[in-house]
Length: 458
Ligand SMILES: [Zn+2]
Image (cartoon, rainbow, N blue to C red; front, side):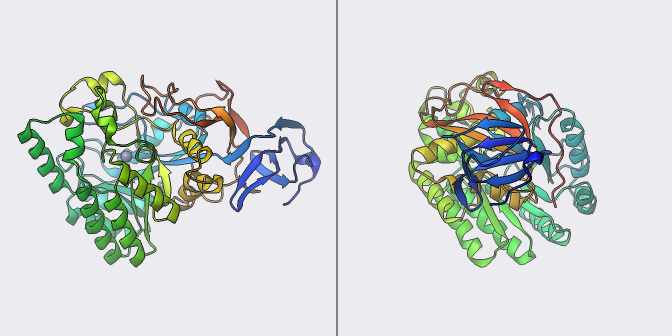
C-alpha cells in the first residue's frame, strides 16, 4: 500500500473492506482532487474529513456498458432521459454508463452520435460515453463514417441481426461492418438473434393464436441466439475484428461464445442482470408483459449456465440493457407481444442485485468488482481511470452496507414498476462518489444536473 502526505488528503474513507483489483482488503482510502490518492492500513490515514466506513464494503463505482436512455424505438420513446436515467444509476452505485446512439430514420451513425452527445452533456448525473450504432438507416453513408466516428470519440459500433424490418442488418452488411471496423480499430457489438428464425417463430405463434408473454419467449428460441453468435463469430474471426456479443441469454448461446473464444482472443460477451436473477416463470404472471424483452428471459437451466460461464470468464461482465418503459406503455397492447415495447428498466438495480448475490454466496466480492466495473472499463477503453479502486484512478466509489436488507420493490427509475420486485436479499448502497464528490448520501442525490462528464475512451 502506498501513502500520501497527510496534508494532501481531502477525504479519508475509514476502514471499509475495500475491493481492490487484487481482492478485498481492510483499508483506509484517501481521496484528493477527485482521485484516489492513498490506500493505507485501516485507521492510519490523516485527512481533512473522514467517512466512517467500518463494517462496510467499498466497491469501485459501477460501469454499466449497455444502457438505452432517451431513446426512440419506432413508436416508443423510453420514459426516461439522460437526467432521469442517470440519477437512478447513482442510487444503484453506478457512476459510469455507456449509452447507445441509435440512428433514427433519416439519420447517419455520426449524426446520431453527435445528437446523443448534445442531449447527454447538459443532463447526465454520472460520467458517460457512447457506443455508435450502424443500422439500415443510411447504411452505406454510415459505413464510410467510421473514421469520423473514431475522431468523434467512438471506439465501438453496434449492429443488430434482429429487427430486420426496422434497424437490423443482413449478414452481408454485418460482414462489411466487421471488415470496416477492423480497419478503423473499432470494436463491434452484436445483438445476436437470427432474424429468419425469429420471423418463423412469430409466424408460428400467430398461427397458434398465442400472442401471450410466453408466446414471446417461444417465438425467440435460444437456437436463434446460438445461430447468430456462430454466424457472426465466424465472420468476425475471418475479418480479424474485435467482437462483443451483448445480452447473451441462453446455455446454447454461451456454448457458441465459448467455441468462438477458443479460436480467438478478440471475442467477448456479456449477460444482463435479469437473465441471472429471473427465470421464464415471469411470463406466466398475469402482468407478464412487464418482462417482455429481447432476447427473452429463459429457463432456470439457462440461468445456471450463465452463472457458470460468468465464473469461468466465458462471459466477461454483467450489464443491464436498461430500456425504461412504464406499465402504461408495456400494457397498451396487452395480449399481443408483437406490439409490446421491448426492454426492462435496470440501471439502478444491477449493482444491488449482484451485491445480494454475493451475500447469498453466488459470487465473491472480487468477482463482483470484476464483472460490474473492471471488465467493462477495460473492454471499452476506460481503464484505469474507471473501474478500479487504485491510486490515481477517479474516486468513483460505492459504499455498501452488507447487512442492510436490499430494496428491489421501489426504485428511482422513471417507471412505476420494478422487474425485481419481490426478490429478497441483503446489501444496500448507502453512498456513491463520482470523481471524489458525493453523488448519493443515504436517501439523497446531492449533485446537480449535468455533473456527469463525457469520457473519451482510448
Ligand atoms: Zn440493448
